[in-house]
Length: 212
Image 1 (spheres, rainbow, N blue to C red):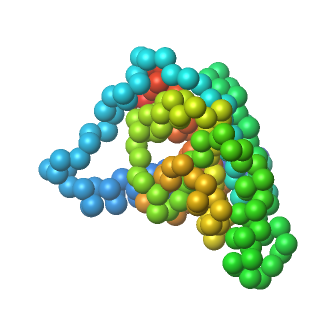
Image 2: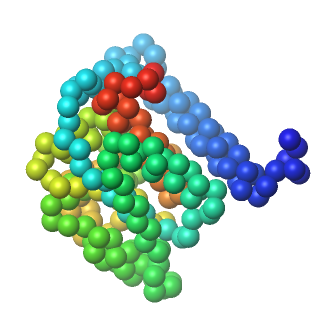
């Protein structure tokens, strides 16, 4: 099928897949430059400490601050939500960025911060995605999911910030701060990567044949 024969949604999905592929390739190059192969770094695919064990399942909520999603992105989001529902309930909430259409960046972040906090309960285990957060691999994401079940929390919540990042209330509230890549990701790309990694985390926890 030629590009001209593809629907707009198919073209958008192809473009998004290419963007993700390029992001991953660039991340691998940066990682190799920062950590030469002869250094003592954890090897990819190390066994998760919860592999083969029963873990407490928490409902999952994802808060994303940003503009309205494109149809192609939403199709991928729905696909991974369906996959995740085999392991836990998934609540996907979109929060409009810059709700007051202000030109003041600080005011924008403050308003977004307030909107995010309205969706967080005191008993939530909150994971904030931030470019200055801790680097984690797929096995560590699985361990994060397993660890959250041992905290006494009633829900596992992930927060993806808007274009100018997170506000002070969320930064104070977050229990864990991580980053998905050394690259800065568009919030829609970050959401898809997060969903795929959460699905991968559950297959690791269940010992299923997906992560290699």
